[in-house]
Length: 194
Image 1 (cartoon, rainbow, N blue to C red):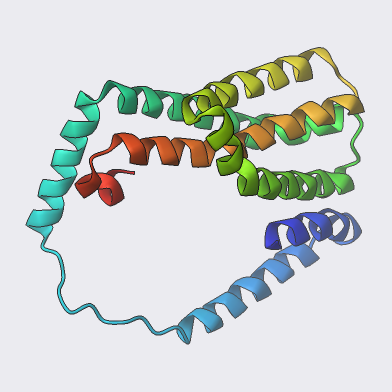
Image 2: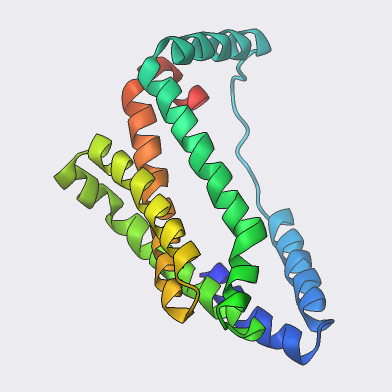
């Protein structure tokens, strides 16, 4: 929710006065620090040893490397995350400006993306249970590729729909990847390696 609110108000505030978003950021971080200082954590009775953690981690790495499905999932996730980061960091905002989105409304598109991702995340498991997790993974690989291809061919506001589809698919992929990695990892190493 905070990403939606921040996205909606950030652009117009910056357009009105470029200094105010930095002040709001400073105040929010300050309030977070004050709030965090009041949180008390429970003390653990027994602490795991470094040797035990090291042993479990090495065993998990060996098991992961020996499991072809997990290695494939890792490569798919790395490739898709790289593509998502390129779009997030280098392409999305200039692309939106090039198709006619006003700079003050880029935050609105970010808020819409957050809403879409929240909705998709809420329904991912239900969809995956119906069509299967492996099919869902394939769908989450093909769909963003098609969306980005269409974005490269259509350079007007209609292509915002493909941008939204790209991010919706990213939100769909994350729980699918986690579920499959948990399914394919041995139970004793799930928390360490997932």
